Image 1: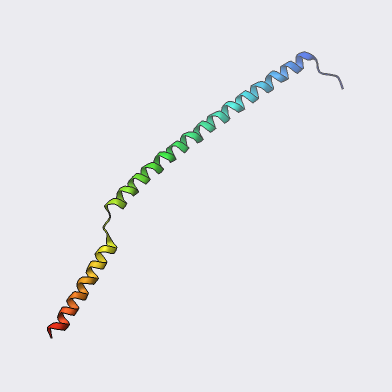
Image 2 (image 1 turned 90 degrees about the vertical axis):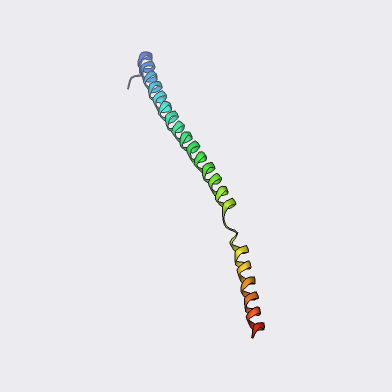
Length: 84
């Protein structure tokens, strides 16, 4: 087995450098895409939070309405019971 010449080693190192640079460029692009998607998810989450807050502020006070109906029903029952 013969030792490779310095020019062969330099050529292989240059090829390896090109492969590594291409790999890093591809990874950089993929990471940029992941960051962009994360930003989109953050914006959607903030939008959903705002919409949910708006819905919570405008919802009917259902427990209060139910309590009022129960009191009115009790008052009507007592009124009918005393009217007889």
